[in-house]
Image 1 (cartoon, rainbow, N blue to C red):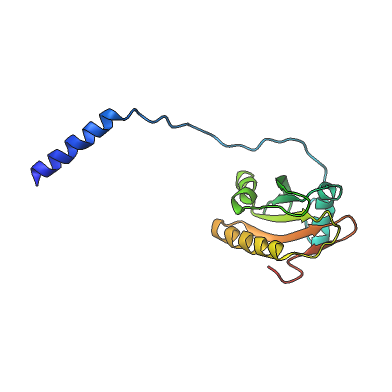
Image 2 (cartoon, one colour):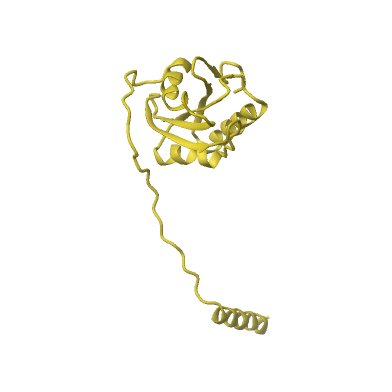
Length: 165
């Protein structure tokens, strides 16, 4: 047994001598503030409030934009991030991209939203599936997804109000 251990140690030593050391990057993460806007209501208390905020970002877009609004414990917006810009009629959204700004900004919860350039706010099957994935991911990491809004120029749909959350 002792010889077997010695042989394994010698083999490991030979392997390590043949391989150069791997360089590992030392990193830090931080949010970078690109700009800011004033939000007179200060707090989001309803889907209409969220629509008023999201509409500024989404109403004139010619492609689908997926936006994350990060909120503190009093539902006051602390950060807004466009986490994905899609094509004319599709946007691929992954939970890690949605929650990255929320984690970095110490958000207690988020509201997500995207536009439909067609100006038809009816949720697609993909919209509903993405929402369910985000809600589940949020539960795991401790950041609630309060709502998902589909924003158009004149109206919107709240997936929470429609019972999809």
